[in-house]
Image (cartoon, rainbow, N blue to C red; front, side, top):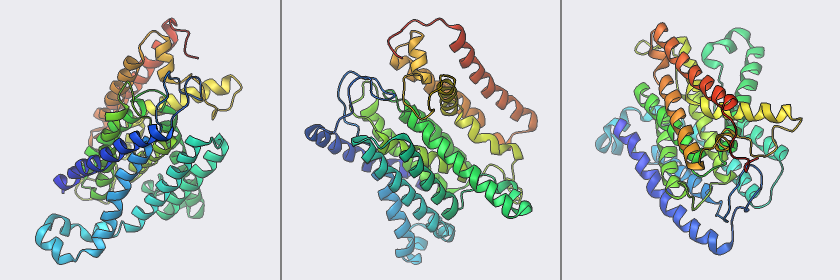
Amino acid sequence: MVQICLSFIVVSFLIGFPIMAVILYASRRAGLLDQIGEEAHKKHLVAVPNTGGIGIFWAVAIPMILILFGIWIVPKEVYEEYLPTVYMHLDGLRSRTSMGGAILIALAILHLMGMIDDRRPLGPYVKLAVQLIAATTLVVFADMHVLKFLGGEEYLGLLGTVISVSASVLWFTVIINAFNMLDNMDGLSAGVAAICTAIYLAATLIGGQWFVATLAALLLGALIAFLVFNFPPAKMFMGDGGSLVIGTLIAVLSVRTTYFDPESSVHPGHWYGVLMPLMILAIPLYDFVSVTLIRLAQGRSPLSGDHQHFSHRLVRKGLSRRSAVLIIWLCTIVTGLSGIMLGTLDKWQAILAAVNTFAVICLLAILEHTTPQVDESIR
C-alpha cells in the first residue's frame, strides 16, 4: 500500500501540470490577472494570472472522484487478483466513502467561492461565513472532531459534543485562513503547504492510514505541479480558489491523522502525540497569530489585508523576497520534523522535540524585535 499511496503523487502531478499549463495560457488570453501593486496583502509589479487554484483543485478532485467510484464499481475479484494489497483494505476504504464525499463537497464550495472572490471581492465576512459552513460540513458529516480522541464527548455527553464540534470548526477556520494569509509571496504558501503535507504523508504511511495518506499524496502532487509555475518569479498565483482548498485539506490531514490510539495493541502511542499538528503547522500559525495581534493592536480588523505578515517583516529587515521565502520553508521543515514521530517518543524525547519547536519560534520572535528595520518599502 505504501507504493500505491506514493504513486498518487505522480498521478496528481500528471493531472495538475497540464491543466495549469492550459489555464496559464487561457488566463493570459482572457485577462484573468491579479491586480498590480498594493492590493490586499500582496505586492507585485507585473500582472500575473491568479487562476492556479483551478489546477490544484482538479488535480485532487479528479483522482478522488475516480477512487470513490472505483472502490465500489470495480468488482472485488478484480482487486483480489490484480491488486491484492488494496483488496485487503477494501472494506476500510469503502467505509470512508461518505467522508470522501463530504471533503469533496467542502472543497468545491470553498474553491467556487475563492474563484468568485478572485474576480469580484466578496468581503472578509462573507468569506468567513462560507468557511464556517464548509468547516461545519466536514465536522458534522465527516466525523472530524479534534477532541473526540480524548474521550471528552463520551464522558461529557451533549456538552462534550458541542465543545468538540465548536473547537473543530474553529480549528478548521484558523488553518484555512492561515494558509490563505500565507499566500502573499511567490512560492510561499504552496511551499510551506508542500512541506507540511509531506510530513503528514510520512506520518500516515508509518501509521498505516491509507485513506488519509492518499489524500496527502494527492495534495502533495498538486502542490509540486503548482510550484513549477509559482516558484519565484511566479508565472501564476493560486488565488483564493487555491489557498482555501489547500488550507482545508491540510486541516483535514491534521484532524484525521491518528496520533494517539489507546485501543491499539500495535502502536497506541502517547497522549502528547495529539500536539503534533502544533509542531507541523507552527510557522503558519505563528504568522496567523502574530499578524492578527498586530492588527488588533492597531485597532484594525484581523481580517483586513496588509503587508505586515511574517514574510513582509523579514523583507523589511533587509532580506530579499526569495530569501524570506526560503527561510520560512526551512523553519517549517525544522519544526515539522520535530513533530513527525511525537506520539511514539519517550516522554523526555517528546519534551526535547517540543523545546526545539518552541526555541525556533522564540528565535524568530527575538530576531524580529531586535534586528533593525532596513527596507521601508513594504508596509
